[in-house]
Length: 323
Image (cartoon, rainbow, N blue to C red; front, side, top):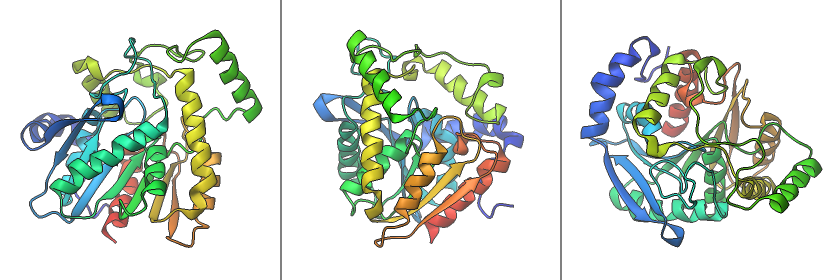
């Protein structure tokens, strides 16, 4: 049983309506700043009056801070001030293409620059604690790049199912061939082969979580706020992601701060094999300790999973943040 106060699936529907939603409306503050090339970046935060520390969340692809209401509430209930922003091109932040559903970024360097500005201009000015970083999926790749480039920015980092590789793991030569072909027949503004606009899949077809309650809650949030909806990726985004993941793997042996990587054992979104390779290289760093925890049977959305997966995941994260 968890030593922490965490929401439970047993009464989540009623707690979400009666407690989490009012908390989000009444206690969480919202703002916007100007990111790279004047793209608006949306953010939210809540300050705990007796904060044990400050946690900054780096979200995954297609996600919005609106999806993280339960997690922000859980972290706050356990004594933390929490800051979160929507990466450019998704959520409530500005989109760069005429079709707002296409996942696009010019370079992951833009994500990193936005993140650094968020920490410098928002997080540090509103909290006296040195922030700790919690990343999920694509947010893990962005977070790793931020840490490698700005090693003094965060005290430590916890990764949930980080995007250090993408499934299906195609041979490099074939992946490069597809990206080259796509660039020839399409533009950077077009979807990659097989990608399309946002669609709400039924729970039975989802590859993200075993928790039907949490799945339906976040899908309802996306229906209620349609401007946060995002579809598949462009070829340009995939090429940028490939460059970013290669940069991480090449440099992670000198990772400068303590890290916890939590791997979803049944992940069908990111490539666990490459993730394990990156984590093994991270462990070679003589600058800071790293540890890997595998949650057997969990799907990709560790932070949105059934309690039997989510509770040990969050317990490990909170233990790590506290130490």
